[in-house]
Length: 110
Image (cartoon, rainbow, N blue to C red; front, side, top):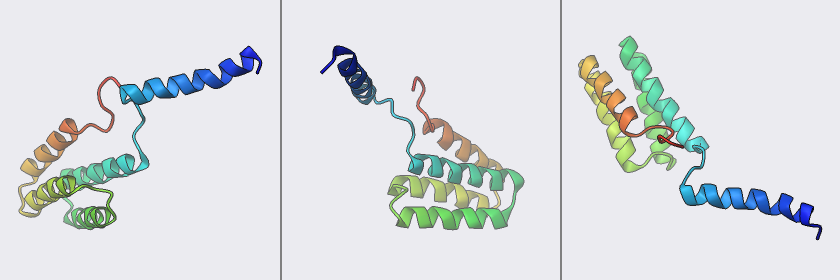
């Protein structure tokens, strides 16, 4: 095998291994969709729109049933929704942004 051709094969492989070792993979489609659900919940809360909030809560349930949200994520998101359902929009919004900050879509440095 020509050394130039070998280098073209080895270099991408080494880069992939380095990224894997560093844990620097881009977010998955599931991660992206879960972030969209959180953003939708925050939009409903910010707009104080109970109808949107109910649609988003149903989406949380469907994603959990499909195995796309962990039990913990499901519980956290529904806790935020329940706070908003109770009429405490401000606390729900704060909890939503706190959740988003503590579980960033892309980790710092990635």
